[in-house]
Amino acid sequence: MDDRVHPGPNTQLIELSYEVSRPQERGLAQRMEPQAAEPLVVDRARRDIIARRRRRDVTVATVSTVIFFVVLGVVVVTSPGWPAVRETFFNPVDAKRVWPELVDAFKITLLLFLTAEPAILILGLAIAVLRGVTAPILTPIRLVATLYTDIVRGVPTILLILLFGFGIPALNLQGMPDSVLFWGWMALVVSYSAYVAEVFRAGLESVHPSQVAAARALGLNRMQGLRYVVLPQAVRRVIPPLLNDFISLQKDTALVSVLGVVEILNAAQIDTSLNFNYTAFVFAAAFFIAITVPLARYADWMAARRRRRSESYGGDL
Amino acid sequence: MSSRHSGVVLEIDAVHKAFGDKPVLRGVSLDVDEHEVVALIGASGSGKSTLLRCVDLLDPIDAGAIRLSGEDVSWPGYDANAVRRQVGIVFQSFNLFPHLSVLQNVTLGPRKVLKHSKAEAESEGARLLTRFGLGERAADFPDQLSGGQQQRVAIVRALAMKPTIMLFDEITSALDPELVGEVLDVVRELKDAGLTMILATHEMSFAREIATRVAFLDKGVVAEVGEPAQIFGDPQEERTKQFLLRVQQAGRA
Image (cartoon, rainbow over all chains, first blue to last red; front, side, top):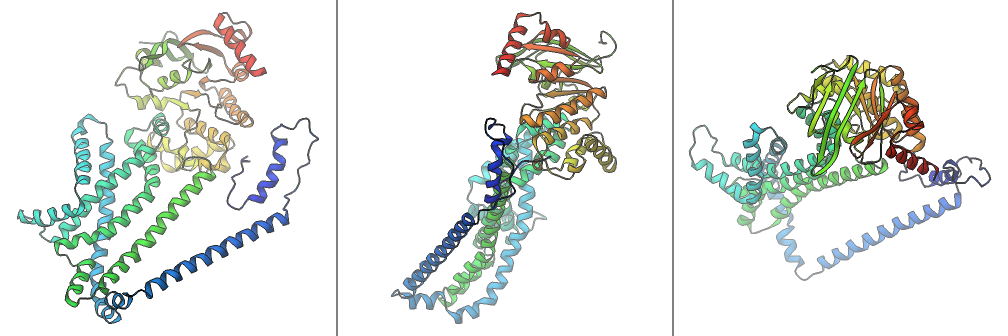
């Protein structure tokens, strides 16, 4: 039977009684009087002290946080330039005017982001897997995959967007779309898939060789071992770093504005230059934050859950 | 080349294996008959694990031959997957697949390699798990099991491929002492069922009890081979005596 104890976050009291019976189990106390196993003992005084300390910690944290933000707010609002800043950056009249335009433009941002990400994941995974192939006939493909990640990661994303957006349509190739939105999207996919490929590769390499040996020992061939044993473990491990890239991509969709695509940054820029008021920028930032902060919290939560799991089993998940 | 006499399942013939310029196997020869249980004993680094990995073609050999039912399978280019369908191996560190449930661990080989249907593989897998007292754990994941249970699952996983010979690579060395017994019980059951086995082990009393023959590996060769009573009771070679003496002293300490 499984008699291992996995200490979780709330098991201090249970552990206490476990400690009591342990020397006897291990046979270390042969010369001591035999001890009768006691039922679970809960020392009320100890528990109360711990609970009181925890309450005190929460109170201190709350009070210090509130003071910090109140002081910060007061410093900003009482500063000499505050009325002018409020007028140009937080103007309710401008906010009302610019809101509908920004919502429309943000739909373009979301479209870019939500359609680019699946393409990036597929392309990135394909590149990572191809970099690891060993079949001699696929050597050129392996070389191309390596070159791709090296070169693409060496070029700033904004430059890639300019090259794709203005360069490729200028070739006047038959049957190629000439929309700058499409080529801006393509540049994001190309750029990010190179980074994501490296994340996947790190995940593939983190799976211990003994797992591959176990798969091969069962008679699975290389492809089957990759598909059923290595890949599922690798993908699970890299989900938190992938979410980070996802957040980064969401912000970098703003780079497509250099091609004249009216996504949210460009829309805000147009408004600010027409009305000499920067409220639109603050709004645009708020739109990005509305997406990225929940994603960041989610990524942290996933990472923490993974850590908890692997700790509680004392092993590598 | 045909086997020297019928009933020989595995012939290990003058096998050499070096890692870099460090020789590990220096001409190991050993035959294993059907239904035989051969215990490989020897100090750490004597080549026991390497020999088993070579037999399963997980490491290529440098010279010699490994013949399965008379056919040399060690030659470069031989279909290793076909060999591994006949040879099961269980590792010291279990190497279960952590992302798969116990039942999925057991059915992966039969489904993907033997191309059994999901239903067929699962009913056979469940039957094997139940037979070895693991029926209740079929839906659990490996990290929810004790070390002894994990190793029993690893044995069932290898058995599900219906191997003609099983290799056990120090399968109790990573276990807490109180969990060793349940794993050894499984091996006893397999012997009773007539499975051919090679067992690299540090458990001398178990080797003595279960083996039909014991092979003592020293510095990459089989220094002495014989029935357990002879090897443990009346070893002929000086180095066998020395080794058993060291083991005995360590056991007393």
